[in-house]
Image (tube, rainbow, N blue to C red; front, top):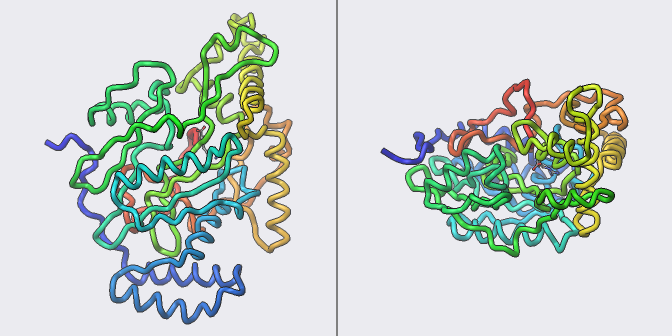
Length: 386
Ligand code: ARG
């Protein structure tokens, strides 16, 4: 029996007509937004020839960079899209071997960390080809902790592959790379110089540091497929910088994550016998304060939710001036702390269009989405911490 639950039949190639239609729409959009890029009709003809003979085609580096940036611009759940056009795009499409991919994921983290001045970066590895799905990264982010309940599956996967770690608090999981459905995934320990971390302390409570809490600097999402013009890039990890509430209100506070509100309440001597003492709310504020304070003091880029909310409204205005609407998911945009004290709470947004492309699409399992398997976000009533 194969120990790896990822062996599925090879995905069917998307029908050529689908690839061609998606390619043409993308090339027209690219030409429209990049008026000096040349004649879209001749580029579309060349793509048609390539698709008819090989079932696929190759993006130019310019098309790839534009596609990745627009995929960010189209991400309805992201409040941080004001800087979409500054995404640093690393064109690593020639890499398929797990060793090379792991090495470049580590280089990604170094570039993104940038000594604490976090830079938004995406590394794009080889795309899926007809009948030949590309190498995948297993795991939802490049950096994750083994004792985070959200990592349970990843921990057993790594252990099954021979990883021995995971007994200490906040231990970083290895990167797991899977080259094909017929081979075993491989794991790679993250070199120490790739993971900048921030020990958490509180600006007014000296006892807080004694809790031994920490978080990492770079949230690098690695379980989404970048889809551009009918081509799927399943290994395309990307990062921005953190907004404090992601760590302080969700990762460290959610009941099914680190569940630390009771611990914080005890530290601050809050009355937990009555909900009406608002001990949960007050603990959330102290935890969020500690996160922002610690990152700031260590010179690691982090945004607060008030500033990021104002920036998002600036983004909507700027996009409007360029004749574009901004699809947004209210339940993801409104921060999980003091929502109504931020301006993003007090309005509605254009509904996310599942067909909007280029896009980052969620991959639920390693191989299920190769080629045309992903049609957009599955409907879900529960938000998760991404
Ligand atoms: N919410 C996820 C986390 O807490 C990170 C998702 C991406 N966040 C970002 N600021 N770019 O790890």
